[in-house]
Length: 185
Image 1 (cartoon, rainbow, N blue to C red):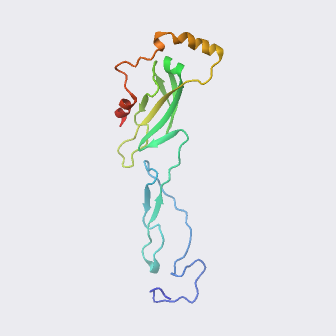
Image 2: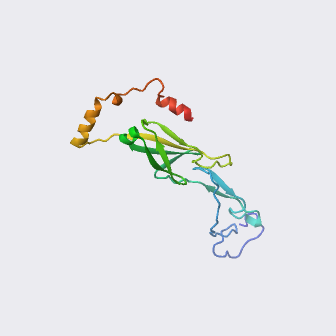
Image 3: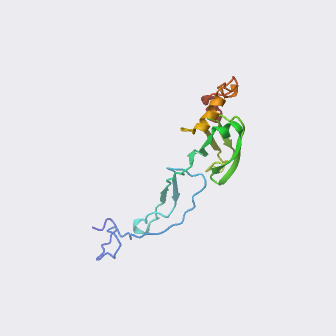
């Protein structure tokens, strides 16, 4: 009945269990280091449960659950963004703002940019947990093709269809999707 303590309590104070430990809640401020990811665990020594008989308190273990961003995806220390542009901007080139984890940055699309191109913003990713630099932001370019056209838009495209510049011609210097992926990984 004394659980090896050598003492028997006549009465237990409110909030104290049968082992003599008091149940209480405490708000603890923690600093989460840059670079931690989903499923990682942080430890704060001496901030866990008290030990019976006045022993050393245990450690508080904090399990990290990363909240998903609505536009950006994490891949290790890299950040991925799917950018959709219309085919006019892809053909003529343009300047666009894209979101990063630190705000927006302006990028330039060169004329003739193809769907599937991957743009790399060096150092715009997540800081490495061990302090070895930062990841990159990868922008996957997707050229959006309209699903419905007005009669005027259709007429313009029909006139362009016969132009030699609108016939697919990848050439020997264009890289396939798999070759482009190998460059990044």
